[in-house]
Length: 183
Image (tube, rainbow, N blue to C red; front, side, top):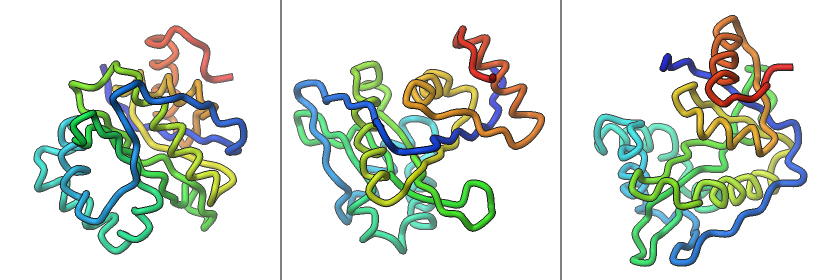
């Protein structure tokens, strides 16, 4: 499948769907020194070539904001206390106009734990954190993450069209997901 970057927006942070974690898992917030857990998870989902590259990105993006990470970054742990999933309820300027919105950022669940009903509780928790700070949210993804995109659509995120490749991306996703997305 062609990999096309895309953006999605949720116009408000009201009525966030709620899902509970399955038994044997728990959520917790980031603690200083969790950088390695973040890097391990994000590398396992092919966001980075190796953990060293992931750590470099983490330090560049979040290194100066570790205190904020303790309020905004979530981990899922298995029954052994091993971090196996993460996302960050971050923020940014989607349109480049200076308006800061909440951002669902770096969602990842280790491959051996995918399909175990962990992503929805993780996303719900992150969106609830965002609702404490922001009135709307956005995220970035790509067509190759079509299952995640389908989940985001079900959570009320909508396509954010920024150019001609967006229409190609969403048409491709409509076909793969067998659902009408663009109105």
